[in-house]
Amino acid sequence: MVRQSSAAGVLALLSEPDPVFKQHALDALNPLVPHFWAEISEHIALIESLNENETLPQKARDSAALLASKVYYYLGEYDEALSFALGAGSVFEAETRASGSEEYVETVLSKAIDRYIGARSEEKIKSEKVDPRLQSVVENIFLRCIEERELKQAIGIALESRRLDVISRIYSQTNDTSLLSYAMEGVLDAGFSLSYRDEVLTFLFPLFPKPKAGDNSPHVHSITRLLVTLSNPSLTVPYITSLVPQEKLVAYQFAFDLVEGGSQDFLESVRNDLPDGDSQTKDVYDKLRNILTGQESVKLYLQFLKRNNQTDLLILRHTKDVLESRSSVYHTALTLQNAFMHSGTTSDVFLHENLDWLGLASNWSKFSATAALGVIHKGYFEQGMTIVGPYLPQSNGESNIQGAAYSEGGALYALGLINAGCGGSVIGYLRDTLKAAQGEVVQHGAALGLGVAAMGSKSTDAFEDLKNTLFQDSAVAGEACGYAMGLIMLGTAMADAVREMLMYARETQHEKIIRGLAVGVAFIFYGRQEEADETVKLLLAEKDPILRYGGVYTLALAYAGTSDNEAVRQLLHIAVSDTSDDVRRAAVTSLAFLLFKNPVQVPRIVQLLSESYNPHVRCGATLALGIACAGTGLQ
Image (cartoon, rainbow, N blue to C red; front, top):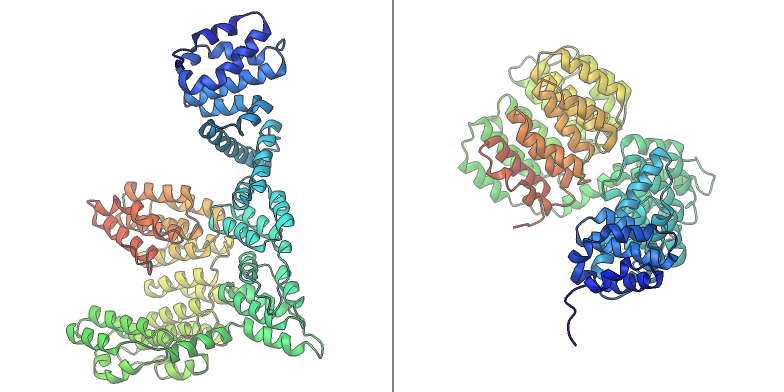
């Protein structure tokens, strides 16, 4: 069979007056487009006019629209290709099932989905209706996905296009809770806005069936993650109470899981809202309240680490022998190495064996050595005061012995670390000590300890105490107060707190205080995504490089783990354009916070930055790799 070398003969039929010839020409040209699209494109105006010609039969007009769509596809004009495909109606629908057009159909449908997602967002903002033809195409995509069991693909499109009814429809047909978990993970791990994320989670929550003890419900952890993310006691408390007393073991499991991710403020609200219960359930609710303090979980971790402590003391001994112990830098390095190796194990054998070495610590290395006790004994609530008691400021005031202030400050910080995230029993003591302290080193330790112990508690009393110490304008104490104020309001996006902190940061002359407050603001906006945008914009426009430094970390922590494209783009721009080396280093380092859930991407993104002439940028690239790829074994 002789291969056709031109479409000229068929194209000539388009100019014939008889509609039958035109219809035949259009039907004949459609399969020829892949081979003769360049030749056909010279007649695109005529083809478009045929699509608009109302004297032609509807099928001929639809064929003209499909032909125009294909030509524009080969010309690379995908928006035009989609517009004409939408006008092709049933002819385009038939084309989607024809063989040989897979690439064209896939591209146009992909473009249709993108346009539909954009249109749905616009509809939400401007109340503009979506083109019904586009709606029809996407509905067909959903139907085909469901028919072909490509359910996760359908859920992905539904999430992007804000079609929660599709998720509900899929679940009603399958009763597969793993699909609900997939939808939940999709909205949590992708860069959706905070308001839409909460809307989706609130929608998904009632769809999950109630778990039962012994049925190995795989969705228990999904429900917990959902409740922790929403942090809404009015949803959490009724859910837990509905499990009591029939499913009390499941209720206990939920309580333990909530402690893993919930803030102190949220857990306290749940504890307070739980009912007292009757004679049958009182014991269950008392146990739930006890679990929700967080101390039970920490005790279990403590017992596990204590039993399974496999640290190699030879490593520490060799390190001590190699390093010059009189150097405060080396002394602090070994102190931290010992603390991290024995974190939560309560094993201070190395310290007892090397009291002479410990005695060489001076000034801030003494502060670190004492604070390290808090890391080693983290969670040892019962003995916390006993362990650090000898180093704490005495009731009659701070010691006048030279260097004692550093061990006292370190001990206060250690006390906070021991009670990190569960500080109810020591917050009062730390607040009183902070108010009574006169020396800036003791204030520094008390502020850090209070910040860690009351982390995420939203305690206005603790915040006010820190603010009063901050207003004394001591550089050393003020820096710690800035960090601690941010830790107490962690993830709250509290506008009043941010305004006060930034106001003082602009007034003070101490760079340490400005840095502490700037990073504290970043803590306040942790996980708040678009709610931080205004503050980020404000900070990045500041003349003071330290406030811009804070703006970079505010952006990074607000979008931590989301891999948000716009946030990554902003950080990369700052990394190559800011006039301050500190800000540039912070911008590169911050990429790790955005991408830590997708560590494979980080080496590729920082590769060029790691070759920068600027040592600060190279340092940031190194830190980004270390933070994001920790424990992954990536080569």
